[in-house]
Image (tube, rainbow, N blue to C red; front, side):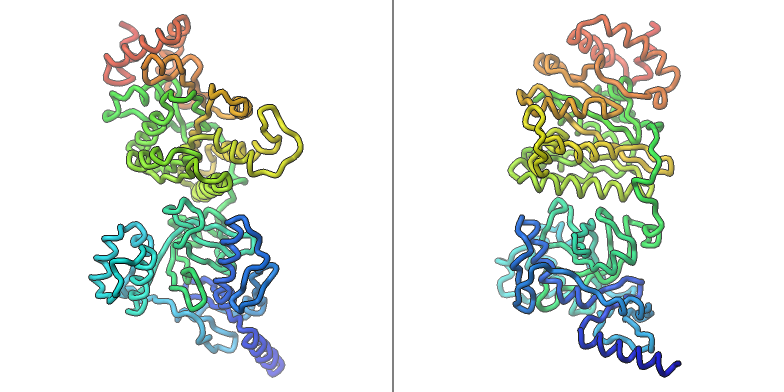
Length: 531
């Protein structure tokens, strides 16, 4: 019986060697397929063609042949017969090591280099780094940034150094994936890291996971760096990621924990004080800021973002700008302490959709790890426009030219905001455009009206009279505000709303701003109502 098993094993080994598809199992438990490595270039060419809107037909493989469809093929025997080796090699059942496998650098004293740090450096800093490493390059002053980074990494590898990287996982339809960089707004770029299907299955990875680990340079015929070893998933151990509960299976609740936007530093900021008092913002809130053009919605978003980053540093914040002007993206990056992801107005609608879907997937993965996440979206109207151009035509067109199926995915994006009973929350603060003169924008607003549990209305008349913040407190409000405000605040707020209701909008806002400026914070303002 033992001889028969040895014969079967030898036959399987010989078959695998003839196929040239040995699997690698790393010391950390991560898998890496040599066949997918060797097919890295053709896989990437197919992926790039798909991103550019081209089909995979006619893409040249590494052997120069043409293939109708590029599919990553794995041997089932490899998965069954491999086991983990302490040395970091793939080990067969008979105990022999696969000498073709990549050696993982596990020495803690080995020099470490993170590719993300190099990407964030300026070209001048990279040149200084290359000179410090004594890299002899004749055309150092004329090299592109990407070529200079590659030269530094190659020199580091030649000196037995370990290279590390992190990125957000984007799984393609063929089963393999790439770690995308925020520097390219999570779209395809030269800094992408290839990750094999075996690694994805082994750790239960999903699109949107932030994966960190050791990587290797591309071999001959390959384009991108490849992941050798998974060290963390969403800044936690890979074992934690494998045991998490899916986002759709988590229990949503009403927001019951308030974001404190105004403290001693923001006590003079009327935007945060008005929002804290009249429209309290909770963790897991689904907020819609309804605004006409030039009413100050961008300023309100920046103020909210800065207040959350100062008062709640534990919150992971993403600012998503869709179809915005490039100068506004730069302003947001420089004024807000958070991750800014953008797709400007000169980008196609497909890129708007790709960026938005990567952001929401990343947020869901973080919530699965019981983290509090805030997404500030500007704007939900332009995102709905992009989906309207991308989705296949259903034949049913609503007024304004909106396809009946176009608003399903934007609603799923907005509806993902929730407070989670098991821990964690996803808060989405999105702007909706009105009074633009577009019938489509009116239809989109009517579809989203009432879907949120908090609305902030900006008034054009207040903005035209330069009364800022131009928040109409009569129309603005939060559902279940009694869960976020104290009994004292609720009683005072009801009395205040009754007084303000009889005033005209401009008069009401001027009166409110004047009274609030005379007090240092909201508590003093409410106490002054008795006098």
